[in-house]
Length: 443
View 1 (cartoon, rainbow, N blue to C red):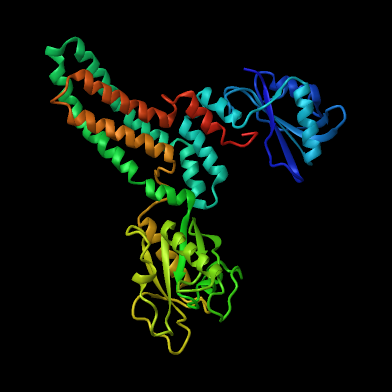
View 2: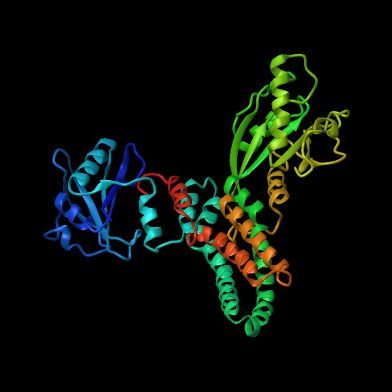
């Protein structure tokens, strides 16, 4: 393969900018434009040692560092060299042009990681973990991405495909000797399929938690006007994000603000107060509030503990789905006439129980015993592949005593193919292209 190069750090002004080069000409290309101070030529560089020297790309010069990662012990499995320059956008652009003039071409999106996959340095799911680590906006999301990138899910899937391959091989052999081996192969396959179905269902059971860890929890703050919804948003996030007044109907549109709580991203959405209104703009905000409540992961139904006649929750939340959890939050516990018949009492003004509220949100959505460092299915692609594998396994299990072995083998091979899409063993070029198109340049 040809030698590729790209700027591996974000564009813009910074202390350091890195040019990454991968391919069999990487060492020689750097040697043409970089002169180390301590050795005769970079072509004689000791791998994994950083060299200080002078970079000369014709019109641009810099005092820089260079390092070589020799094949096969590099990220891509090829010779990889990096130039660490000063981080000016114009400087990096000219250095990249110099690298290309010396024999490289500009890399496509994700091409470094794609080469790592093609050279056997990582599975396809490992590569997706790299994307998740780059895009993760919470500690839990980054940790889940790390486990994916370092083979956590890949190992779990390989633990399923290995015994499945044994069953397939045994049954294929039995086709040649049906009278002697078919019954034995069927009997041996039953407990293996039972175990595979159980383990696949267990992996699928983590999808809900995996989605939350990766994408965060969307929390709709809902209630009547003037119960303190905007004050609650401001108190939770520590910012004066929403306008707070004594005038009913101040909030007419949704306002979103995110924070990280114990590794999980919580996205709070303050909504317009629910009431009957003849104001066209407010009515549009109220309609949007109901839509947000329907699409959120959890709803905080806020009432005013100093107000004796709050509207009935069932009337205000009639459009919220049965599967959407609702937490009753009673605000204004700091007032003397406060009364809390049902719900978690809080004060947006003093901060009473706000940390407890955040704990309740996470526990309600995730459960108390979810370990974000464990094996979680965070990818919709993985979820769909596991569901197809599970369906094929169950079909094979149900048809063992009723259909010919050839038909059972079709189901087993379909299950293996579905598992293989996760690791890349059976993924087609379209799937691979789609995954690596999501990468940034230089990765």
